[in-house]
Length: 108
Image 1: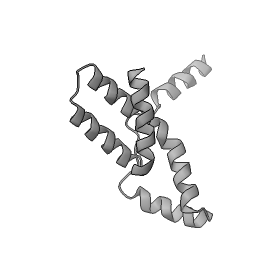
Image 2: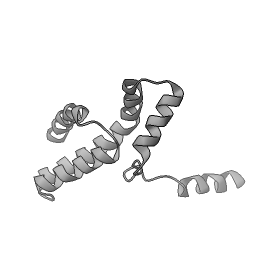
Image 3: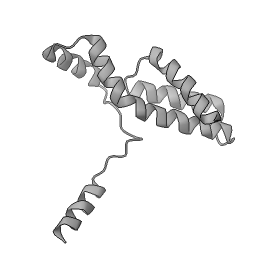
C-alpha cells in the first residue's frame, strides 16, 4: 500500500511539459554554466536543442493540425510556434528544418 501511495504522489507532481520553458534570465545563467563547465557554445546549444526539440515539435505539430482542421488561423499558429521556439531558447536556424519535418508529419 505504501508503494501505491508513493506512485500516486509522483503522478500528482508530474510537470506539464507542454508548458515547460526557460525563465527570463535562463540564457545568461546557462552561458555562465557553460563557461564553468568549459563547454563550447556549439556543445551547449546542442544540449539545449536535444532537450527542447521534442517540446517544440509537439507544439508545432499540434498547431499545424489545428490549422489543417480549420480550428486555428495560420497566422495564429505561426505566432504560437515562434513564441514556443523563443521560450525553449532554440535558434531560428534550427527551427526551419524541424518545421519542414513537422509539416510532412501533419500532412501525412
